[in-house]
Amino acid sequence: MQAPLPPLRHVPPYWVRTSTGSSGAFVGGTPRPEPAATPLPTPPPAEPVAAALPQPSPPEPSPEQPIETFEPLLPPPPTPELFTTLRSEDGRLVLTNDGLELNKEQFSWRELEGVDVQPVRWLLGVLLGAFTFLGFLAAYLQFWLKTVPAALGIGLGLALLAWGLRGTNRWRVHRPGRQTRYFALTGPAHSWQTLATEANRRIGQRHHETATAAGYWLQQTALVAPVASPTEGAGPDTHAPV
Picture 1: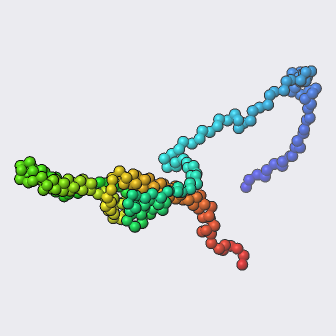
Picture 2: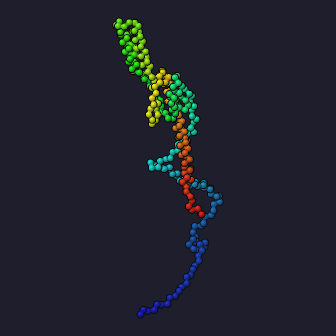
Picture 3: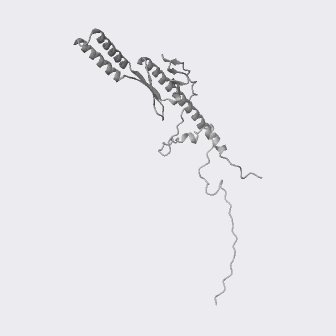
C-alpha cells in the first residue's frame, strides 16, 4: 500500500510594475531625438508599378495558329460597256451589244470563249489554174495552137489561179464545253481579221464584267452570313415558361 501524498500549498502570483521613464532597463540610455526645426523635402511621387514593369512582347505566330489577314473590300461592279453595231461588207456577220450574229445564227458574248479567222486557199483551183496556164502557154510557144485558142486557154488558167488564191476565210467560233463551229466567208482577209479582233475584245470585256460582279456579290454574301447564322440555326426556347 502506497503512502499518502503530502498536502499541496497554492502560492498566488505577485506582480511588480516598473516604469521606463525613471527606472527600469532604459534608465540613463539614449535620449529620444527631438523633431527638426525645418521640414524635410517631400520625396517625388513614385512611378506606377505597371509603368515600371517591362511590357510583354507580342507572341510570335506559330504555324498552327496563322495570323488572320483581312482582305480589302472590293469596289462595286462598274456599269457594263455599251457596244456599237458593226457589220461586214456582205452583211453576213453582225457584232451587236448582246452578241455575235453569223449567218443568221445568234451567239451571246458570255457563251463564247473566242473567235479566230484563218485564210484558206483552194488548192484544187490553184493547181488547175497553174497547169492550164502553163500548158496553153507551152503549146502556143511550140506552135501547136493558134493565137486565139492559146489566149483563151491562158485566160482560163489565170482565172482558175486567181480563184484558188483568193480562197475563203474560215471562221472558228469556240464555245466552252461544246463543239467548235466553222463558217466559210469570202472576201478580203484583212476586214474579217479586224472584225475578229473586235469580237474577241467584246468577249473578254463581258467576261471581265461578269467575274467582277460575281466577286463583289460573293464578298457581300460572306459579310452578311456571320451576322445571320446565329438567328438562322436557333430553335425554340425550351427553358421558357409555358
